[in-house]
Image (cartoon, rainbow over all chains, first blue to last red):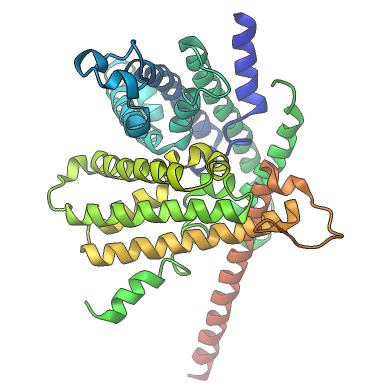
Amino acid sequence: MIKEIALIIISVVFVNNFVLAKFLGLCPFLGVSQKTSSAMGMGAAVTFVMTLSSAITWIVYNFILLPGDANIIAKVFPSIREVGLVEVLKTISYILVIATLVQLVEMMLRKMVPALYESLGIYLPLITTNCAVLGVALLNTTDSPRHLGFLQATVQGFGAGIGFTLAMLLMSGIRERLAIVNIPQPLRGIPIAFICTGLMALAFFGFSGMVQ
Amino acid sequence: MSEQNNLKEFTKGIIQYNPLFVLVLGLCPSLAVTTSVKNGVAMGGAATFVLICSNFIISVVRSFIPREIRIPCFIVIIAAFVTMVELLMKAYLPPELNASLGIFIPLIVVNCIIMYRAESFAYKNKPLVSVLDGAGLGLGWTLSLCLVSAIREVLGAGTIFGLKVSESYQPASVMIMAPGAFIALGILLGFFNWRKLRKSEKTMKVYKVSMEHD
C-alpha cells in the first residue's frame, strides 16, 4: 500500500509533472512565477484545492455519475442505473464542484486562518480557472489504465499539486535571475520564460521511464 | 452598426488581437495538442464552436444575468456547449483523433480565451457582433495553432498532414515531445515581439523625421 502511494507521488511529481510533461496550469505558472514568495503562495493554494477537489470529484464520479448499484440518483430514478450520467454531466458537475470548493475554501480561510488567507488572498479566485485542477479531476476518473480507489485519487491530486509547486518554485528562481540579465529585447518576458521552461522540461525528461 | 464595423469585429481577432501571439491566452491546449496539424485544426474547430455559441447565448441573456453571479453563469453556459462538442466529436471523428486530444476537449471549459470574451465582449455587446467576435477570435486561435503544429510536425515527425516532407530528413523527435513545444512557442512569441518592436521603431523614426522637418 505504502509502496503504491509512493509510486503515485513520484510519478506525478517527477515523471508526469503536470506543468512540464502534461502542459496543465500554464497560465498561473507563467503569470505568478515572477517572485518566489508568490509562487509558493500559489503553489500551496493549488495543492490544497487539488487535494480536496480530487477527493470530492471521486465521490461524485463513483456515487452520482457512474451507472450501477452504488448510484444514489438511481434509487430515485431507476433508469439511471443502466446508463449513468458520465457522458452528459461529467464536465459540468466537476467545474461546479471546483468553483464551489474554491469559494468555500476562501470563506473558511477568511474566518479560521486569517493569516493564511491574507497571504493567499488574491490567488484563491484564480484557481477556479486553473486547468490543472480540472485536469487532475478528469485524469483521476478516466479509468484508464485502471480504476483508481479513493485514496489513490486523493494522493494523485496531492502529488500533482506538489509537482505544480515544485515547477513554480524552480521557475521563479530562474526568473528572479533572468530579471537582472541582459536579454535581447524581443525575448524579454514570456518568450524567454517559455524557452527556460523547455530546458527544464528537457531536464525532467531524464526521469521518464523511472516509473511506469 | 454599419457593415464595415461588423467586418472589423471579425477580422480584429486574426491579427490585431490574435489570442495566442498577442493576448497570450489559451496556452495549455496550444502546447499539448499541437503535435500534428490535424490535431491543431480539430482542437481549434472545437474551441471556435464553443466560443461562437457561448458568446451568442451570453449576449442574448446578458440582461437577465445579475452582475454578482455572472462568472458561475458563464461557466455553466460554456460547460454545456463543451459537453455538446465532446459528444459530437466522439460521434463523428475518428477514435484515434479523439484519443490524441484526450482531456483537452473537456478542458475547453477553463480555456481563458472563452471566459475572456464572455466577460469583456459578449456581456456588453449585441448578439450579432458577439458571434462575429467569437468567430474571428476562434479563427485567429485556430490559425495560430496550425502555425505552431505545422512547425512542430515538420521538424519533429518530418511530415505535414501526415505526408512525408523529404526522404532524406531525419526527424528530431524532441520537437513533438514536451520540451520542443515550449521552445517552439517561446521562439515564435519572440519572433512576433521582434516584428512588433521593429514596426513601432519605424513609426517612431517617421514621427521624429516629421518633427525635425517642422
